[in-house]
Structures are given as C-alpha cells and as structure tokens.
Image: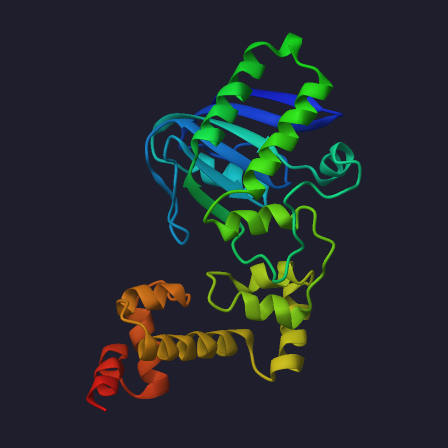
Amino acid sequence: MIVKHESIDLYGCTLFTRVTMKTPMRGPVPLPSEACFAYIVDGDDQLIMQGETLRTTPGHMILSLCGHTMGQMLSEQNETEATSIIVHFDKALLLKIFNNTKPPFWKELETPVVRYVVQMAASKLIEQYFEGIAHLFQYQQAVTEEMLALKLKEIIILLLQTPNSLQITQIMRSLFSERTFTFKEVVDAHICEPVTIENLAMLTNKSVSSFKREFKKIYNTTPGVYIMNQRTEKVAQLLQVSDESIASIGYQCGFTSAAHLSRVFKSKYGVTPSNYRLNLTDK
C-alpha cells in the first residue's frame, strides 16, 4: 500500500514525486508514463528486476524511459517500507524550459538506445541534489516556477555528464533526439539484449503481427530463429578472443542461463561452448 504520495508540478506537469510504500502492492505505483529518474532514499536492498539485476539499494539511482515500468518495479519488492524521490521528464516540459534548444553537453544519438532501465550508485552531486529536492517538499509554499525549472535543468545536465555510463547518457540524449532509426537498425541493436518480440514490435512502432511480417520480408526467417542464431554466433566469436567465463559471455549475448546457451550452441556447432573453447586451444 502507498503510505504517502506527494507531487510537485511545473507548468501543469508532474515534475517531482515522493512516494513511501509498503510492499508488495497489488498494483504498480501510479506514475506518469514518460521517462523518469528515481533515487532510492531508504528501504531494503532487494532484487526487483531479474533480467536486469536491478535492486532497490538505498543511495542508488534508477533511470527508466517508461514511468509505468518504474512504478511496476517499485511495487514488486518483498515485504518492506521504502521511500523514493522521482524526477519526471515530460518531453513538452523539457522543450519549454530549454526554449526548444538542446541542453549543454547534449549530442545526437548515433545508435538506438538498447537499455531502457539503468541503475548505478548515485554520485555525491546526485545525493546532494536529492537532499535539496526533499527540502522542496518540506517548504512547497516557497517554491517558484523559476526555481523548479532550474532544478530540472540541473539534473539533466548532471546526467548528461555522468562519468563511465554510456547507457545513462544514451537515455538522456534520446529525450532530445530528432533522429529516427530504420527497422533493421533497431532490431540489430537489440540482438544481445533481453527483449521480447512484443518489445521489438513496440520499439519499431508496429503491432506484433505487422512486426513479424516486416521481419520475414527483411531477414527471410522468423525473429526467434534469427535472433538465436545471431546470439550463438556472437558467443562463438567471443570464445575465440575472450578469456571471460562462458556464463559471462552468454549473459553478454542475451542468454539467461548456461543450460540454455549450451543446448543452443551444441545444436548449431555440434559441441558445447566449453568443448568449443578447448578445441580452439588445441589448434
């Protein structure tokens, strides 16, 4: 259940949300659908998204291109009481506060965004930022539109400069991107990502049935067969040049278990990944 839910609006759009909840909940935390950025204030360190190994770790931040996804993740923790502060990135609001220009440090996307939810430990600057946002909830009567616009600009610029995280800067760049990608560019960018056919259909702005028809026309096979074949070939390539564990290589290439990788790899190459690697060292 939601213990406390507060929001601060800017120009008629939800900008900040602070939510305290007892989980698990029957439904997701109600958040706007646009991209958002959550800071975990307190609560238990729990796994909330298996495939992405996302956790509700206090002092960590989670950036998502979909607020509904964020709300679902936050609601599915085990029994705990947790508080998060969330910044919402409404595109119309972003355009307004930057006067239809691009923010500092922004660059156009060169490839499609492939990670739509990203987590990392908050920097000291991010921690201090959210300490300031917490004070805004405490003294809302003193908050002005000019102050809120500046706070939104501040977090965008901080995230665009996040060191050592291309995934975070890619998501932030996408909020201001004018570039569109072809069907094939989107599909090929997600080959090694844990996405479903439904996800790919959504990312290419098609229904599942029209996605499958377009896929067949371009690749002359089904999505499942093509994606699994490409992933397996990528594993074979990495086994030739990398000393990483087979499990790690499999995960990088989109396989969720060693058993699944071994079965698919043997079907294609006639040997298990470990024997394939041994055969390479014998040559």
